[in-house]
Image 1 (cartoon, one colour):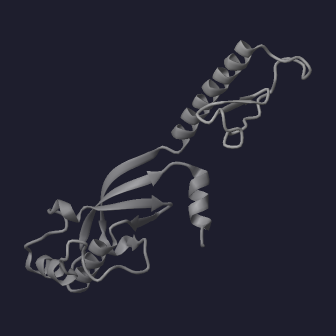
Image 2 (image 1 turned 90 degrees about the vertical axis):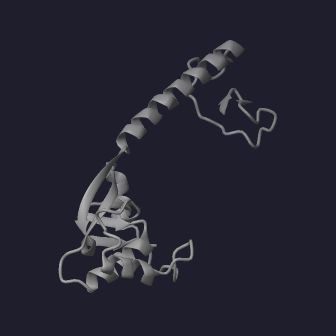
Image 3 (image 1 turned 180 degrees about the horizontal axis):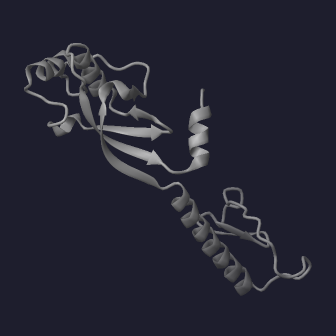
Length: 168
């Protein structure tokens, strides 16, 4: 919504308290009131400017999605606790047993491709239950267990700074 000369234009035009007041710099001296068409034109030009800024913001926070392979020991959890089974009722032990017997393989079976987010040099998994099973499987075998990751990388330095500092 735009606010020009004390008038709100937008979805809540009749409700002045619900309108968002946008501070636009008038092009004429404060005592001279712009004509209604000038108000609309100024509002449209403000919207165009907002759209241009939004495009710049989108470009600065764009993310890169990348498929990687990593040692399961290098992947971190995003939660400090998980449920005791999968949402469909399957147990963790059933998946771990399938991994041990070779029925399921971490690099072959697509349901074990984990979604992750990279912050600086750390990779955090969003699929904590599957990651838990893979880490438990890793404990039972001498070789390094590799996992496929679909990693989202943030390109916004301010957001990266926030994520490093966030503790609450």
